[in-house]
Image (cartoon, rainbow, N blue to C red; front, side, top):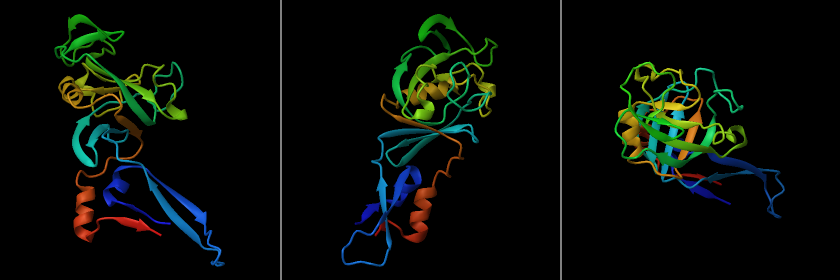
Length: 216
């Protein structure tokens, strides 16, 4: 049994590595074979790094853009009424506010008519756009019920620091740019690891002349 995967796919996507006993009737060595099963590359993927407080976007295997963000000041998790940011794989289910002016305040996902300027003190105001998320794993299964969003914030000076009330905050200009590109169904990974250097995959392929990795 063999499987071939591109090296960049291993870098950018979680792969499943399984160990299985040799099933050949002609082999009595007790060896093990390693098989690699790699998920199909998603069309759009957003990776939110907790230690970096940044988001990296991908289109297929191509790195697109990096944005400053802010996650929860209270930590990580998915408990109800906890204001924690959930970890793991989520997906975009809706994009709200397309066409609204920058700074438009949204309450219960509807525009209020009030335009808020950056760095004005209005509590945990949600402005400009909302990207609604749904968890796909047990550890983030309550994300939709908890109203965990990626959304615009007035507290742009707080970006790059964990100061939100559970959601992933972005600057208004950045979330407008993101919402012109991202579509429902995009994958969102919230991770506890730093983001890779933007040229990691290309540099390694060039240095080592690797095009694919094959496991026997």
